[in-house]
Image (cartoon, rainbow, N blue to C red):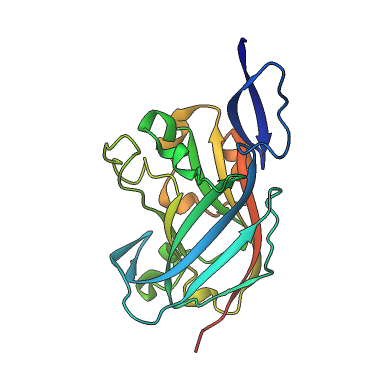
Length: 227
């Protein structure tokens, strides 16, 4: 019996699956996106302009915060509290009905990853490069180092944001904001190489960078110091 390929979408992510011509793609198909999550794990490091220095995993007690999202990208566990003095490793994960993680598909090769970039939109944060010697503003630094095919990610213009490091910074203490983690696919892959590290928080990113939001996860953040 002949086989055909059907394209379908969930959480605005387009995947392709093959099915026999007498089978139907349904919401229960294991290839349909079921959920996603963002993990914030406290790490060691220091702020420097638009990026971090000396990033390293932290031993012993540390903050570990997870936000779960349903298939529509809606947060399932309310708002989160992030300490503005701390740096967090921020990891995005995307799952299908079978529980398979799919986020690395966006990083399978440079040719694939060139079409994608993550933005954190909302909050109107004070960014670290604007704070001078105080070095106490917000930083979001995508930091993948290797593509799925084993080749090296060549610096800041190639990073995507599936793996990133984030701090709110003391200058944003007390902030309460709805922010959106947006994985955007550009109409022109050449766009990615023009994006600077300080371009991550624009509310008008969609106007600046023509393309499509593949994933958009909105959640509330409170910048509060932890005991």
